[in-house]
Every structure is written in structure tokens, then in C-alpha cells.
Image (tube, rainbow, N blue to C red; front, side, top):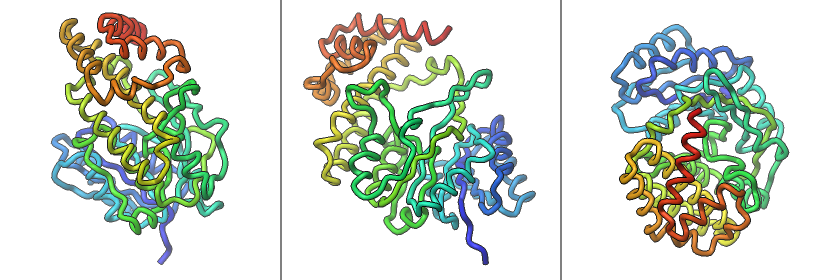
Length: 346
């Protein structure tokens, strides 16, 4: 029996409007030796029926129906059934370029790598923007490179970097060794527990990684809706980001690299506060937004991260925001956030 190169895991929940586009992009790959595992996470629309129609039509597609438990656990279910040498995660409202599997697999196979990363494409429907975070980082990283470069880049930018992100947390733009995952029991936590189950999965996986490859090129379409900022504010974001930050530091400490990576984790936490406050300003009334901002200003986790952070090295707009937040200038934090929201909604 021929071994399978890649298992593509597609968690599905109430995405009937996008599922065909996603699955067609996977079916039309220029590779042939792969399987598709669709995990229907208790959908209440026609997503489950659509998934079943594909698994009936194509022998390499399997559909699993389960009780709703969230994205992370749906991916774990897919991992239980995966037979491929490598794993690719594709969210069901996104889609991929026709050569994504072949490009990433050939790079991983050539270097016997445990993971292969690529850039992605922010897709707004009428406009696409290719990310270039990895444009100059292509290559093979082995041994100490994992802790000295890959993990720090995964955490985020240093104070002097232009962007908060370098490698990025999202699991959907990389191939992962199924052997490393299964041998070491690497699994996703629930996004209901922490706001980014992807980052914790990445760190838990990289702990056991000996070789990583970065390919230059963008192959994954991360689909966004313009103006969606107004629908994304949640009151629990502050606590969940703080909890994620604590879990992140815990893992970095266990790897013995907390000292050299904490400043990157601090910047990522500050970025989370900036994004979440903007969401609040975009969707809440004035007084409610001020209350949300004050919660960030008074929270010990965020204020401690800001206390000794070298704000002066940040890009100008981030520097202004961080300075206002650090010194609890609530109204000014609101105003700079409002300016951003209005500009981004044009």
C-alpha cells in the first residue's frame, strides 16, 4: 500500500457559503498523493451535507461528523485519522493556491524537515494582499537555529522590527510532520480556553523540531471581510490574551529561552491590546470604550509588560499608542484608536 504524502485537515462549522470554494481549491492541487479529512464540528447549516457530497464523490476525501466543541478540538479529531507523512490545516472559509501542497512538500522532503513554513495572502474578495514577512528568510534552519531564530520569529517582532509579526502564529500556512505530532502527543487546546490555540500548538511542536524550512512565496488565501473589525469585539479578550501570554512565557521558560524571547512576547501582548481596543472603539459606545481602555490600563499583566518595554524603538504609531496606554491617558488612547478605525473603514 502506497504511503500518503499529506493529510489535509479541514475543520468545518456553518460555512455553507464558502465550503465549495475551499474544497475545490484542495481537489485541484497539482499533487496527487494526499488525503482530505473534513471534520464537521456539529454544523447546523448545510455544511455537513456539502462535506458528505464530496466524500461520496472522491475516494481520497473522508468526512467525520462530531458534536460541536470548537476549532482546536476539531483539528485534533482530524489528527486522529490522519495517515499522511505531513499535515496541512486549511480553515473551511479560506482556500489555497493550486501548487501549495507540491511546493511545501518538495521543500520539506528535500531537507527531511519537520516543518515547512510559507507566507499567506490576505484576501478581501475584491483585493488581495500578499504578505512578505518571510521574503528574505527563506532557507533551512537546523539545530540551535530552532531556538535562536524560528521560535523567536514565531513569537513576533523585536522592538526594532517594523511589524509585530515575522513568522506568524497561524498553523494554516505550513506543513507539519505527523510523526512529530503523534510521537510527542502535540495537540490543540480549545480556543474557548485561550484566544490563540495556534501559538501554543506551534510552541509545543517546535520543542521537538530539529529541522525547519521556510519557502519564499504566498500560497494560502486567508479570507477577510472589509469592515469586519466592528463585529469582533468580545469582553473576554483581555483575560484570554493575558492567559495566552502566561502560557507562552511558561513554555519559553521550559525551553530555557525566556530571557531572549520575553521582549517579543511583550510586544505581541501590546499588539493584542491595541487591536482589541480598536475593536472596542469600532463597536461600543463612547463610555463603554473608555471603560474597556481603563481595564487594559489597570490590568497588572499589561501594565507590567509596558513598564520596562523600550517603547521608543517601536514604529511611530505603535509608540504613540503604547505611550498613552502606559501613562493611562484614556481619552488619548481612545482618540488614536478612533482615527485608525475611521481610516481603515474607508
